[in-house]
Image 1 (tube, rainbow, N blue to C red):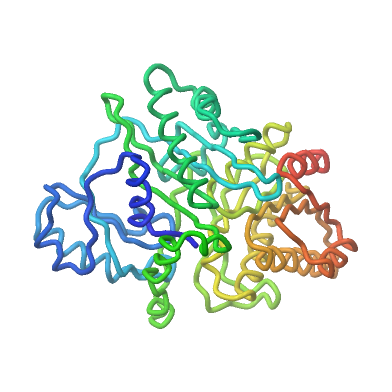
Image 2: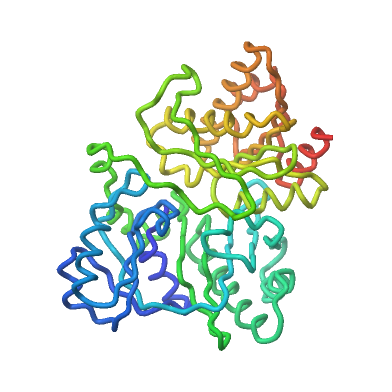
Length: 408
């Protein structure tokens, strides 16, 4: 379950992770009683990324402009989801923006810390700056400091950012989360740190132990309005200035005909021969970093985002095949690395999509190697994959090493 930003920040507040003064806005009229001094920023509360680029984040200087902006944002769908809530937040002038995350590696059964000195909307293009530290023993402040040193931080920033990472990790463990992400962590000219945006993914299987998180599921926005109105979504995150970006043509990979779901995938092109398909910014960055560490060069990547955004098994399977189609369209790609973390049922759908895609390519007399890493694969699907050019991997390091070996 992906929490909305204001819900994630309520958890940050409990952990004393610094956040800006903010106020929940349920309708534009609420802004007439705003308790935060202007200027403020209004943020659409939807699960999708790229809100700023899509027009879902606006800075305002007074009440009249704020009410007008709120009306616009409430009526703006982002990836087919309309916000039911906005977040009004104090404006913050950051001198630097970092990326931080704690995520679960369910295959290795250990958490991973991620950090980059390049945060904000351009984080996906900053492969060379993403650092990771696996927590392979009982957690201690050593792990957080190690991450900050790998990020190249110096002076007081080592301690201040390490403290944030420690609090993120404590939240991650106490709430049985799959992901805690701060992007960006703003750094003021005086060295003050501030969580300017946050994302939290709760483990659905652990909600029974956390009624406070389970209660939030009743506050999730209803995306049915967007589907009913059929309004196309706005583009996703801004690509890095040195990367080429393509959006997916809207077709069903089985029939090669247009499909009704208008949620596009974004391909970011690099300069290598290994295509990558992942879900989530943190996992994508970790996968790119692992391939580079093994001496390989990614050719491109597609981030499918949260698997919860795909309603129904068919939609997820179709999008996975579409992602594979995008990644493989570059003739320089010799191998595709698929690294997806999700529930067992979603893993089965991804595996079925890989099998279907390769079988279709074989019939077209085109063969491509795939390295597949999933949480769990059904025995029947595994047998089906055994007859195809697929190598199953149990860890990210193994998947990256195999991909690099095959690409040579």
